[in-house]
Length: 361
Image (cartoon, rainbow, N blue to C red; front, side, top):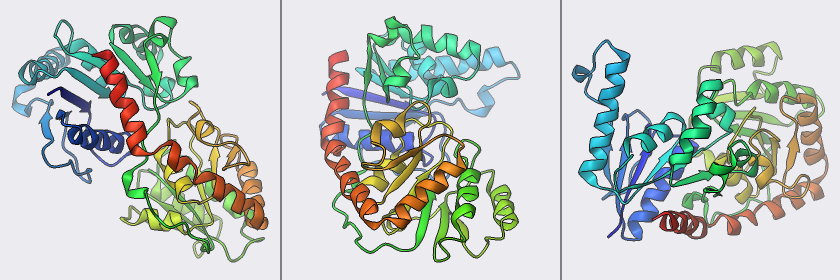
C-alpha cells in the first residue's frame, strides 16, 4: 500500500483546503494510506473523511522560545520527524512557504515531494526574496503542480520542465443538481470579504444598474475584515434595501443555483472553485480576467460566461446589463457553462492528480 502525505496550513474553509480534503477522500478510496499534516486546527474547518490520519506540525507553545532562528529550527525538525515517523512515499504540499518547508524538510529522505502553487505566483510569493526562493527552491522538488499556463511562465525552464497544469476537481456535492429554469431576481457573489476579492467593485457596478432594474437585488455571501467597510459603501449608495451581506451560510449552492448572475471580482485568483460551481449549476458567470488566468481558463468570453477587466466597474455593469436584458444570451451562457461538469468530473480530474503523483514515484 502506497502512503501519501498531504501538507497544508489548516483545513479552514477555502478553495485550496477543499481540494485537499477532496483529494484525501479520493486517495483513501483508492486504497492508499493517507496522512494529512496541518500546522494548526482552526474554527470552521472542513471535515476529514473517516480513516484519514491527521497530524499537526506546529510545536507546542512551551517548546518555542523568543528566538526566531531557534523557533524555525524547532519547526523544521518537528516536520522532518513527521516524515521520518510516517514514511510517506510521496508528499503533496499546497501553498506558499509550506512548499519551501516540504522540499527542505524531506531532503535526503526517500519520500518524493510535489508542491502546488494555488494562485498567482507573484501574490503567493510576495517580495523579491520570496520570488527568488520560489524560482530556485522549486528546482529541488520532484514535481510542481500549477493551475494555469500564465502561472507556469513565472518559473524558470528548469522548474517548467517538471511542472504540470492540473485543474481543480469539481466538488462532488455539486454533481446531479437540477438546473433552475426560473431564476430569482438576484445577483450573487461568494468569497472572503477582503481586499483581493474587491467586492467594492461589485457594489459600484450594481449601483450603476440599480435604477434600470429595480426588481434586482445583490447578495454577497462570506465574511472577512472588510465587512463593515462594504456595509458603509452600501449605505453611501443608499442601497441597504437592495444589497445584503448575510455572512457565511450553509446553503450557498442553493443561493448560487437560483440566481440570475454569479460574479467574481477578484484582483488575482488561481482556479476559482466558486466559478466552477456556479457554472455547473448553470448560473451565468461574470468574472474578472485576473492573474494568473484561472477565470480565463474556465470561461470563453460570451460563450459560457463573461470576462471583464480587473477593477472595471463600468465593464461589469455593462456585462450585467447584457445578461439581464437578453434572455436568449443568458440561456446560451447557462447551457454552455454546465458542460464544464464533464471536463472537471471528480473521477476524471482526481485520476489525473493520482497519475501525476505516480509518475513522480
